[in-house]
Image (cartoon, rainbow, N blue to C red; front, side):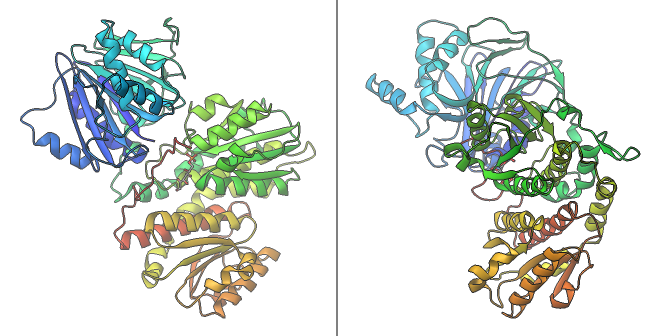
Length: 602
Ligand code: F6R
């Protein structure tokens, strides 16, 4: 999983455009970066490390890289460790072509063996380098860059978004298979990237390339052709995202900005979908959805926690539902009734594990629905139906606002799927209406920043909750561990006594989510007493309806709300807990070590 970017045109500063694009794609990988520009000559500069290392190397040169065509890459290692040699772009031996790639070439070893047997010397450990050598050899046969690229790609198996430039050509050629690639159509230049924000400051007019399509970008314009070389009448669409949305807007980190964007994100998710006067929820995207006897939700990481919440929600509506980790489902799909809907919950819509699970489900005849943030993402395009969560771009690697929007989108889905006798409860409609404002209240009043000061450098951190709050406990722990690098675990509160309680000591803070006064709340308070008796510090995240505060060392308060919306509010407090601990510890909050945002490898 990496980010690729490119542009062609005399109307832009190519080097600067590539670097700006890479900066906005760094969330996709950040262990090395490089750019190449082409025209009469071909120049390549690449460095291990974050983008700053590449910028410094370019600044050390006498002049910017020259040429109207350019490609760039930010890497998340799959084949070979981060190093200058393994960084993209990769060239052929003659230094005539430069290639950038996101994905995995599955047959690279046999291609490498073949090339080495023919006398080619490789300069890196990467799978990508086979592409540059093949391309160079096809060019040696005297064909055009486009024809050579097409012949090269025909030899590849695996997943790829690929782009190449060559000495002597003011052209970028690009294609995709199972990896995202989008063109940006500007007035003086044409762009491409793994994701729209990379060129959003230049244009909002985009073309989403389909698997197997090829794009040729030149100063005079762009064309898209299909696998056979026939021209495609590619549709240009306008994205609604604003360039401002992809900056930090004064916040120290994208994660904090995105936590604070949640009221807006939720309003966008609900807009036009909840009619308060009629007391109805209507989601146009779901109009064509048949009725189903059962639902399977497949997802990874944070989205899996949303899927767990969605499954509980559907079960409470009387619909048999289960959530599965997409990576497990892909290799061992759960048994499916004939009338099962398989729902992929995926912020990016590009997560390889989730795409694979959805393809597996479709292959077995299931109807599929993508619940995703990214319009026209692979999941959205491949599924029978798509429900957009409308959270806006999320740049921080740790998912925050998109989790909240996923929970609310899943409410809309559960409502749509309920039996014909079901009527949307008025109190749910009111709770959804009030939610954005209540999230704002949590953001304004949260004491998380001061509470966490007492709990830095503990041995471990535990998070517990029941029913709807169980996924919140899991998510609280995931967010905490991924950005603080401290050991954190989430448990169903009732599970503590079945083993994890052995870990609980005076040095392990326990964050307990308790709202309302129902049986789940009472039983969780019982579990809180168990950890308190083991001297563990307790932080209660509560709406104050129960007496959990009596057993807690600290309280993080949320407004009273509906049982289905309370998890969103509780989770905001836990996002802030994770953020402030990571901030105090000086962690790399937006780009935690070893992680990347869009995991496009299985
Ligand atoms: C954690 C996080 C990841 C993603 C997971 C799935 O903060 O962001 O766990 O949730 O990689 O990604 P999507 O939702 O894009 O499929």
